[in-house]
Image (tube, rainbow over all chains, first blue to last red):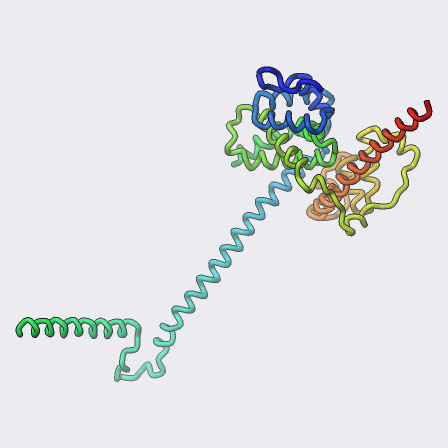
Length: 151
Length: 186
């Protein structure tokens, strides 16, 4: 069994050559690979060992395939964005109709020309009525307190 | 973003041979190597922003080694199996004598295995791996859509990886059988 790691903790030149040639045993390969994964110096040394031997050629269409795969992944994200936008828009429109429906019904009065104003059913009028009632209650309570004090 | 794309393309052009060599050294399977080399560059593209640009060779080598390690440990690699629809793509051909003789050459093996696929996969695989054609070129020649050819190439690669692995296993079995025979004879 050859020495894979030298005393300095780096991969030996022989091990790098064998690695690049594909002649290390699987356990040896994994051991060296684990070290290289965390050591820039040895990664560079491996690259140089690989370049020193007869290079393997990539297919002619290799670069184009990578470009295609990149553009597909980009398109995927753009499509997701467009889809999300459409969903958000649809939700917004739905909410708008939900809330404006009440206003629509109130505004769409049957007798627009009626002189006598119908009792106010609008939300604003309702709120006003409630507030008036509430403040009236407070006043009555204050009056009650005062009455109590007086006693 | 434009500068990043240009720089990335330079890296691919400059280091594709190196990366495929490393991937082949680790996987011992040309089709695995080609695919993992592509995966390496895709990962590099995604990580370009974080890369300081100091040593692209070491950086790419590290990514490649990690990709290959992960792949070799993955269940996908250990338990490669083909579905029925995959199997339908392989044509039944016997091994002719001249093919036997050429077996040892990697290039010849690539050609042989591509030839084992049925059409329309065979011509895409042969075009891409043996005839030095780009997919866009094949799309123009055949009138097929690029996306169609990409899908065919993807399926072809999946099969070719398995066929290569089987071929290597057969070759190992043959070698050990022959050495047993010769030792038996003496």
